[in-house]
Image (tube, rainbow, N blue to C red; front, top):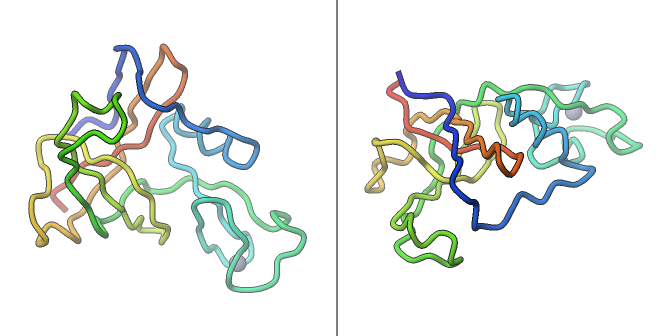
Length: 151
Ligand SMILES: [Zn+2]
């Protein structure tokens, strides 16, 4: 059984999450190991990041939407393998895989793929993934990463 969370206590040298009023529920949810998606209460459409519902009028903004928990599962929509670090904090991790994940609820979310099972060629597009919560207790945030799962 693959781990559902990872705890990292080494010093964080990369950019920190940009938490603001519009996404603070998302980042708080991650700390509780929940992947929150912006959800229309009228039609159930899910969005990330926060957006207007595209299916009908919903003025004023956010009046008919709320954050709801996602399954945290989806499939690889696209990925690329980073051979070079574009930011010095990543230099010890290259090569790493950065993927665009299509969540089962619909939204696309991008993050790093972790774990032993890594995609290598175009045939890996479409593989099932699930969220892994990467906790950074010293810095006080959690990142959503993804790992390939068998089903
Ligand atoms: Zn809607």
